[in-house]
Image 1 (cartoon, rainbow, N blue to C red):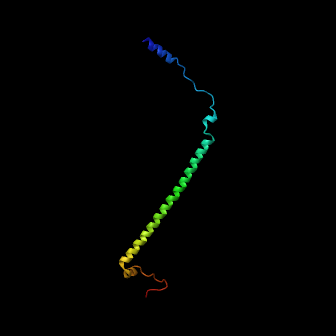
Image 2 (cartoon, one colour):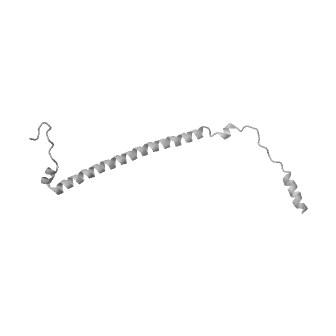
Image 3 (cartoon, helix red, strand yellow):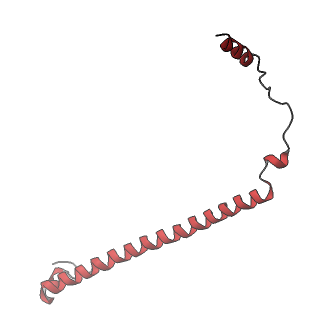
Length: 103
């Protein structure tokens, strides 16, 4: 049992280091010019990727709009073909001349 108290006394007397008041060397703390170059390269690459992706998304959206319009025109042409030439002519009335009056 005395060994336990002896070990406890040794551990209690162990000094705790205090924080040093010295200023660290700035060269060992900062990333330096190579760190700046690396971060700048990552930033430029990210900007270029965002720019390219924006162009690609816009292109896909425009293609989808054009495809939708072409599909609608094709559907209208098929409906007109299905109805026949006589019914398609009667389906679209001629515009009236505003100068003529009924009567």
